[in-house]
Image (tube, rainbow, N blue to C red; front, side, top):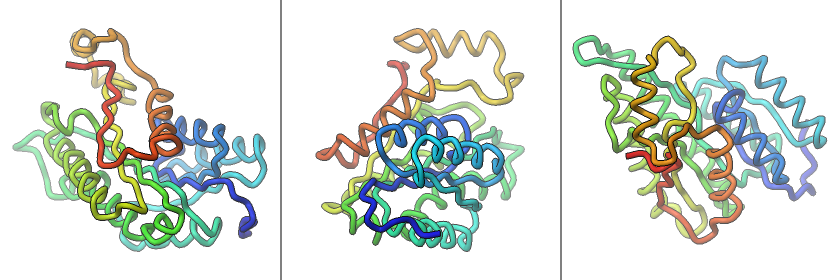
Length: 249
């Protein structure tokens, strides 16, 4: 089924949007009147549940697309499916990411390739596929980085390097794709504890909270609000990194 081409509601593709921060961004942008492409890799049940909820709230406004952003063939297919479905794209949010420790001495090639592909290579090649559609709509790209792109996180050097690369890609593309496409980055701070709570002891958690000026964690909605601002309201902002970190030192 192809959507009505007379529907002028903006279309946004959000990678990794079945759960957590990605899902919060989807809800926020949808509430603001945008149509949402929910990308997922493994989280099919959550993606379909989110899609159904959004479509119940507002008909013909959400669509799921599955794919591995580490696979060039999947990237091309994802782009084609989204454009065939909606016939337009107004914004791309590169949120999908892999995150795990890679201590030097234990690092292997597969981990290196996975972290670079999911956090840098995948976004770059997805952008390349979607630039023509975004240019037509004078759209925008929002890349989700991490404050650890600039403030190292011990035993996560490859992840940090990949996110630093994503920020460099964003700044370069902001120049290359101007004036038709804006490109910005959101760098979250302490928003959610890792899903494996056992990996974060109480001492480490307290140390993190003590380093935050606002003395609390943020939440998914803080990132979603920043994404909405950059997509809908920041018409004269490009090439910037917006730290959403509560004033973390």
